Length: 150
Image (cartoon, rainbow, N blue to C red; front, side, top):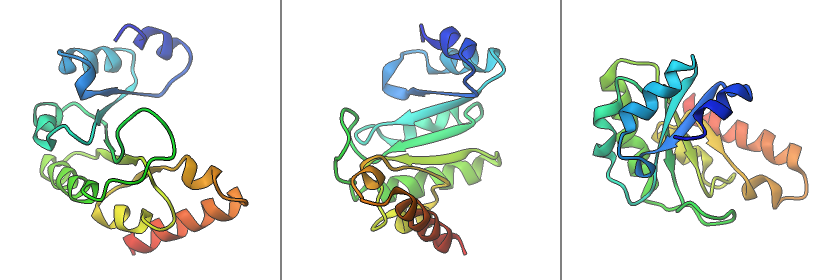
């Protein structure tokens, strides 16, 4: 919460806040939007998806963490696919154009399933940087994600 002004001044276009990091999620989202920025809401693996319901009318992006936050290189939590699908249903029901992002353990071996579950945006740290050819890996990630949508 205390860094919103700094990130806005630095030129951010989207600021994402973890549901678990604040008691006043709506207030934080409003503060972000008060700067003319898009507001994202992040959900950790252990937090129920239903926690998002009160903020669906305000969020511009939902980020589903598919690992527990803390460090790179963790494996994708398989139950995240169900969570992504549940959030996608909530987004569809809202009638709003909310992006659905997934972060954690995304690799060429699982991005297609995450896309098929409903994710639009993918974060892949070690899934790219642990490979010898970043460009080739990124191209394959894009191909796999795109093939799930067609």
